[in-house]
Each structure stands twice: as C-alpha cells, then as structure tokens.
Image (cartoon, rainbow, N blue to C red):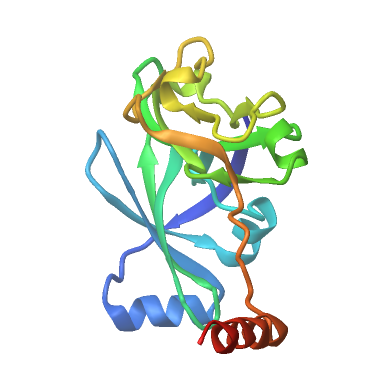
Length: 203
C-alpha cells in the first residue's frame, strides 16, 4: 500500500471569494473530517498533482500542518468540467488500529478463453468497497480471467479477499463476464432484388 506526504496550511477565510482567490494562487481548498471536528485547510496544487497522477481512495496520505501530521484518505473531490482542475478535496482522517471503509480498484489480468473465441470481456465493477484496518488496505484486487469462457462470469462471491479485508459489495454482483457478440444480418441490394424476383415468379 502506497503512502504519500503532502504539506497543508490552515484555511481561515471560508467565503467563496476567498476560495476563488486561493485557487488563482495555486492552492486547493480542502477539509479534514473524521473522528475530530472538521478542519479547513488548503494544499499546494502543484505538489498535489505531482504526487497524484490519479486520485484514489485507497492511498494513505500524511498531511503535515506545522509540527502536526494527520493520516488521511481522499474521500471525495470536486473538479471543474472545463479545466479539469480540482476545486475542493474532502480528506477523511483515519485512526490507527480502527477499521475503515473505502473503495479499492479492481484489476483484471489475463486473456479470457471466451475472448479468444470471439467473445467480449465486460467489466461491470471497477471498484469494490472494502472494510479493513488502515495497514491492510490493498492497492488493488486482482481477478485472473484466463479461464473464463463465453457465458462465464466472476461474481463478488467468487473473489478471495486479501487477509484482513472484507468485501462489502453484494455477493451476487457481477464483476466481470464474457459475452458473445451477436452477428447482425445485413440485407444487401442483391438479396432484395432476389426476393423481389422470387415474389414475381410465385405470382
């Protein structure tokens, strides 16, 4: 499991105008919540993007504020549709030795037999909700689809969770399956003419 450290600053001005000005200065407004009172902070936009090419909920982050540090997970974030810039981040503070719930990405590996025979691999779930101690958060849950034939599927119930991890999704949910592509019958002009000739002959 990955662990990253990012510096943060306490945010005292909470008005929209202050947040807008902060973003122009290259900082992202954020909040830390969890077992303590919510704390309004900001993080450096450049540092955050340097540490995170992709934001995930299963990476423990150490936020340093002065001499204090907080272990957190990214619980939610808002980004601008046009610029793709992050507008706000919600950090969830975790407690050592206390279980938590978070989402973990599903990684599919292997080439399914059914796909090699003309089928299509359909991944329904790209994340699984898990419950575990912070130290046991997996980077991902891997599913080997090599033996899947057309019509086969892997359900949540089929997944062996890593030690210390409980998967919270419904057991009957389909994670990945192999389906056959239905061949579309395309009627050509030649076929239409042939049909017309047959009808005329019958008359």
